[in-house]
Amino acid sequence: MNENIESVRCLIIGSGPAGYTAAIYAARADLKPVMYQGMQPGGQLTITTEVDNFPGYPKGIKGPEMMEEFKQQAERFGTDIRFGVVTEVDFSQRPFMVKADDGKTISAETVIIATGASAKWMGMESEKKFMGMGVSGCATCDGFFYRGQDVAIVGGGDTAAEEATYLAKLCKKVYMVHRRNELRASKAMQHKVLNTSNIEMIWDSAPEEVLGDESGVTGLRVRNVKSGESRDLKVMGFFVAIGHKPNTEIFVGQLDLDEMSYIKTKPGTTQTSIDGVFACGDVQDHHYRQAVTAAGTGCMAAIEAERFLSN
Ligand code: NDP
Image (cartoon, rainbow, N blue to C red; front, side, top):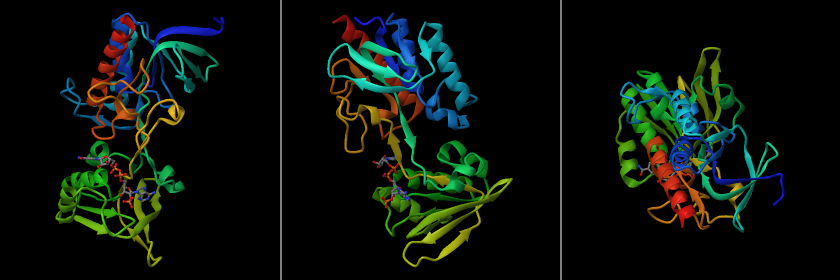
């Protein structure tokens, strides 16, 4: 074997709750896991504020702090955690070949994919400018800061509907901006949204610009896509809920993906279409998308990798 190629028993790609939990279990099973943290070490939780629904933290914990604790726990059992991004994989034969942006080529007996998903954004300059200053991708994380105020949310799917009803409980008024005149959300969620008195639907409209000053967001300019007319909504918060995108670009052509590009796993397991490659967390779950479910599947992936190696 080429001496520049590093051999590992278990390679973990990604470092959210799924990746770190897989690392804790794999390290304790003596698989000597190597982890590449990816573009956003700690994953989506590092862009949230308070996490109040992860068991074991009765007083809540900040997302970035929680991920630091996960990391320390993975390191305690000997995970080799590397700051870097996996750029290329070849799963056509075992051991699998993986390249990272630190110049290393790795030959891995098993691979655990925990690359997660990323929230989709509208792509406006002003959205970027006010990110974390009134622009948010997670109502359950940040809604609390807008108690008693007016906010806007964009999107017409189940996530937007759920988040709008969540915000309606905290905020004075919620403008729900949707580009069509019919919601994509399930009938039950549509009913809930349309029967919540402080949610106002702004149909056939698209956000044009987030308005604000040095204090943060002060409004949202929306344009009616049919009439072309614009109007300004006076809001302190703007929530984007137009879906998520799984981080699976490097696995296209290597693994079976579903129609939304999430990695397909065999029901009740984390096994992908290639034996020895496992997927856990949001990269294979568009439904629950919770830290605790991601951690659960991370544990499953490590146990399955261990069993695979001992067979
Ligand atoms: P979806 O893809 O279902 O919905 C995205 C919404 O955002 C659509 O209404 C879409 O409009 C709109 N949108 C997309 N891009 C843009 C854009 N550039 N500008 C303006 N609007 C845009 O994503 P969700 O996150 O809502 O849901 C993902 C999956 O998870 C679904 O299968 C959903 O059912 C499921 N889910 C289930 C839940 C539950 O059962 N409790 C809770 C949350 C999600 P348009 O409709 O015009 O395409």
